[in-house]
Amino acid sequence: MADQSGRKHVAICGGGLVGALNACFMAKRGYFVEVFEMRPDIRSQEIVRGRSINLALSIRGREALSRVGMEDVIIQKGIPMYARMIHDISGTRRPIPYGRDKQNIMSVDRRLLNEVLLDAAEEYPNVKTYFNHKVQSCDFETGEIVFLKDDKETVTRKVDLIVGNDGAFSAIRRQMMKTVRFDYQQTYIPHGYMELNIPPTQNDEFAMEINYLHIWPRNEFMMIALPNLDKSFTTTLFMPFELYDSLKTEEQLMQFFHDKFPDSIPLLGEDHLKKTFFNSKALPMVSIKCHPYHVGSKAVIMGDAAHAMVPFYGQGMNCGFEDCIVLADMLDQYNDDFSKALPAYTEHRNPDAKAMCDLAMYNYIEMRASVNSPLFLLRKKLDNLLYTLFPRTWVPLYTTVSFTRTRYHQCIANREWQDKVLRDAGYSAAGMAFIGVILMLWARLSGTQDSSPAELISYLWGRVSEAINSWKS
Ligand SMILES: Cc1cc2nc3c(=O)[nH]c(=O)nc-3n(C[C@H](O)[C@H](O)[C@H](O)COP(=O)(O)OP(=O)(O)OC[C@H]3O[C@@H](n4cnc5c(N)ncnc54)[C@H](O)[C@@H]3O)c2cc1C
Ligand SMILES: Cc1cnn(-c2ccc(OCc3ccccc3)c(C(=O)O)c2)c1-c1ccc(Cl)c(F)c1
Image (cartoon, rainbow, N blue to C red):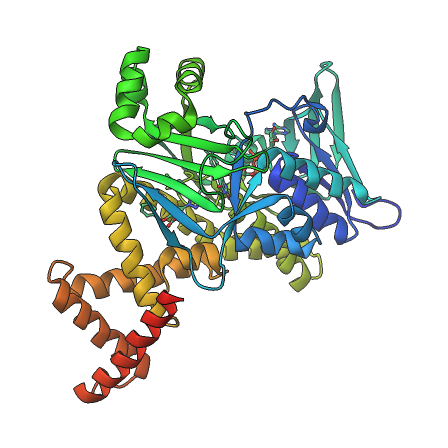
């Protein structure tokens, strides 16, 4: 409970990415913050070379880091990716920029990010961190939480606010499910993921172009690679579990990679590929949506505890980091009155987090269905062309999600409008479609349906020549 000085006492359950960042947000408010993490302190764990896992950090996550003065220090430890590099089956690589003006998403090391955020949280005199403390039970009436330590002793706290940042399999959310009318939905997808590693070359150089998100789109399965500061690439293979299971021998594995990802074999190294593939287990991916995110004025869940999503948009952490901004804004709006701020947080954030879960699942489905590289290239290039011609009207979905802080549910509305325009124009009649799209956009842009064809042609020529020039530069 609030201590003698009247400071609110908050227990953050989970010292992962969102919990560590949230501790900084809460500490800045003057709360007394205790972070309880069930695992040992990652900063004391041995670093295993070639086992680094990285994440794509985009604008939403960067804005949250910026709010607590951590953006610059994290960016310095990341690698900007200005474009996606599409690897087709022939091994040809085609770059497609994310946008103009060096727009980029950052590849950051997961462990480094967590360590830096834990260090930052501990810099605050009003933050205490505890490791090897696992949430065992909690009471949303009294604010009491019981933690089990690895020596089997228990520790109890009674706090003003219980914050569940304990990930996709959250104990705090589990308790919420028993306590309130709680809607819960979880979906495991038939795909699993496996982390591989593309090491630096013999002369300690990056083995591929550095500032790119490398994508091998193969419909039913895909692979991506993000660069690391140690000049390696963390490579993630996404495939159905039954396909993993079907590759039982080294010959079958190599034949599969030779047929589907031929250019990756010399990059990964045949021995590393065989060793990692047969010594690793493909891991599951789950999508979790729930409501509400709070209980009374005593508890709130954020990050994967509230909205775990399949990783096909690279937004899970970014969404969890943005949760910290939304809650802080609600606490500002309601002067730290939890009885008002928490319901307002659920009301504002739930539709957006569910929308992002849906977008990530939509991407997974789209990627499986229709994204061999030629189609992927076409859609991306069409998106980029229309964005160049109508920057204020045609903003590609990926751009709204990764390069703006447009509310996630608005990103979906924007995409549905685009799909309608493309559908109405008729994808197959390419010529008609293109003119149809231009006309509809013109009508929407100028707000008048009766502009003359001559006006349109001269406007169009102006935009097209602008676009050609910008493409040339
Ligand atoms: C393959 C893959 C790729 C991804 N790529 C990206 C990406 O590119 N960009 C992106 O934005 N996101 C990405 N994500 C998603 C991102 O990893 C998660 O959204 C993010 O880690 C969520 O952070 P969190 O703190 O909410 O949960 P976690 O990171 O899961 O942290 C939860 C913490 O709580 C602790 N904990 C759990 N239970 C208890 C308990 N009972 N008591 C105490 N502590 C507990 C755990 O030990 C852990 O430290 C990816 C995910 C996957 C699986
Ligand atoms: C980790 C991370 C960060 N961002 N993205 C991402 C996501 C979607 C994208 O586009 C939509 C689209 C891509 C492929 C097919 C249809 C639509 C793009 C893009 O346009 O570059 C980039 C990923 C990612 C994560 C997993 C897979 Cl499998 C993947 F391919 C990329």
